[in-house]
Image (cartoon, rainbow, N blue to C red; front, side, top):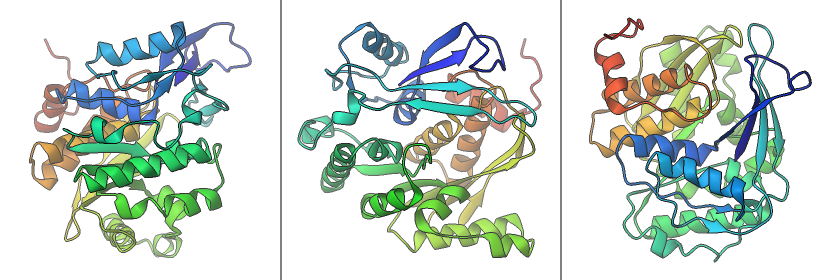
Amino acid sequence: MLRLTPAYSFERLEQTDLLRMSFAGAESNIATSLAIFQHDVSFVSILPDNPIGNAAINILRRYGVDTTHIIREGNRIGTYFIEAGTSVRPTQVIYDRADSAFSFIKPGQIHWEEVLKDAEYFVLTGITPALSDSCTAAALEAMKIAQKMKVKVCFDFNYRSKLWSRQKAGEVLSAFIEYVNILFCNEGAAFDILGIDLTALKNKNTPHEQLYSFLAKEIAAKGNYDFIALTHRDHHSASDNTWSGVLYNNQEAFYSKQYELKIIDRLGGGDAFAAGIIHGISQGWNNAKTIEFATIAAAIKHTLPGDLNIVSEKEILHVMENDSTGHILR
């Protein structure tokens, strides 16, 4: 997607006369992170054959993502505008995605057997089926083929209320669950998509670990997952959050430390977390190391402008194993 943001920090869209152009998207954010972690990653999409489509592809190539499976057709790229919030003013996202080239993707258009023939993981998010009925059908087709080919399917609910209703999202995504091996979720999506309500437990001041152990088990009961990876965010303001993660392997929940964030840009944080989980699992790390790595990867993303988490495994491990105080390195 094309991302447009006021060039000067914290300006409102209606007051700016200069927009900064960059590119992002949930799946492409994850792909970029994994490529930076030195994985072989291919990105599948449809982009217009024009200079904006070229620029989007060039960003992916810059970080080592293979783009040979991107189809070039259609008239426009999906666009969104970001108005960064601070203090008591929330960040605003405005979508302009109707009739994007990708929204017209159809089942059978991508030769998934060829795309996935050497793949270990296939990554998809709930934003894709939200774009159109044909996107829903194509996404479901891809997941079914991936499962048939024994490719691990990684899926993030990523519910976006500005793209579709909670009812429609729940109805559509319920059909996806049986094909998911690694699920990414948070408390809000668990309620919006699965109807799991933690209000009663929270009103009883249930301890964090007990609360999220309950949540993980409730989610697990609705699918057949290898792993469930959960994020937890306490909003103190648009600028200050507390951030942590949980990884559940159907037997035990593993908890990261909690991190206090001073936010530069929170867009892409969940994608950085997902990439960290996939990386840790693929490397054969234990669950405790994997959840700490993913949580720190996402914490670092909050310090970077733009959606992309331009940070290496080495940098994340430095924070994880040595120092999270931000001391200067020299």
